Amino acid sequence: MEISELSTELEVGVRYTPSEIIIENEDYLAKSVDNLVSLYSSFVFTDDNIPEAKAAKTSLNKVRKILDDQRKEVKKNYNEPLKSFESSIKSYVKKIDQVKNNIDVGIKDFDERERQKREEVLKTTIADMAPNYEILVEELEVDPSWANKTNFTKKGEVNSKTIKAIADKMGFIALEKSRIEGDKKTVQTFADLNGLEPYAWENLIVQGHSVNDVLERMKQASEQKKRDEEERARQSAAEKEYQEAMAKLEQEQQQTIGDKIIDQETGEVVEEIIEDEILKFTLEISGPKSKLYALNQYMTDQGIEFQKVVI
View 1 (cartoon, rainbow, N blue to C red):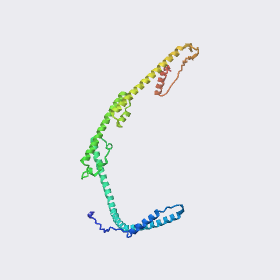
View 2: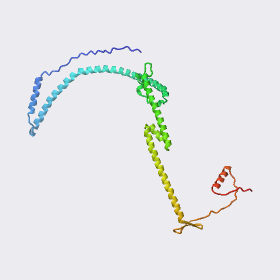
View 3: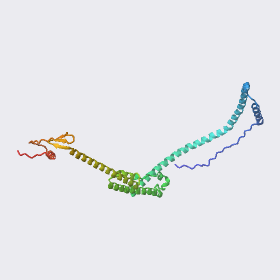
View 4: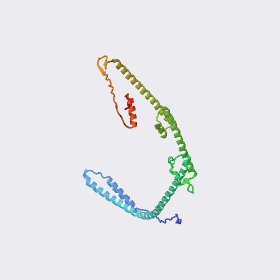
């Protein structure tokens, strides 16, 4: 619907005559007030003339009330035309605002729909550009200002300035990804050479730590690991040496007499040697082939002699 242009040169015809308020008997009034002030200012009130003091206060309150009531009456009458004028103008402004607000809602709705269209165009543009930089769309943090009307052409396409801004950001992301992958490989190689688990160290690279910082930490961890391994080896060797020495000492202190082991220092019997009696049986065994093979292996491992008997 075509809307004809309305004139905004609105004229408000107001006839305003500045009012003048004159106190016609101001000389008399001023003199009367001064006399009252002078009269009561000279009074000295004591406990003996409290009634006179109260009467003076009452008289002054009456005079004060007369003056203040007159002020209020004049002010009310003086402001009445202004209130009427303000009420009229405000009613006209309210009518204008109601129409303006309805139009404003429509404009905002239109602007929002247009922005949504631009955002869809922007998403498509980004999706088309991302493969050229070998990055995922999700890896790009979209600047909200890219969807502003000023960043689009009259045909509704993303303008060259915004395209360049997107390309620069994608290029940076691609370089950063390449750097991270290279640093991760460096960390992985160092981890493999030094017997470290690479995953945790690679994760530090992803979190933003520099490769030099991570390698220095890995070097310290590797050195600590070697120290720990050397300490465990030393303790193991010392334990083995101790056990061998104790076994040798125990052997030297014991003597085998007949079927008994005697402690040479105390003469006590430490252990009786009991020979395992050799038994001989003829058994007929049947079962799955795999189980019989397993039984054969078990008896062989246990030193049990057996042979096939032909019946």
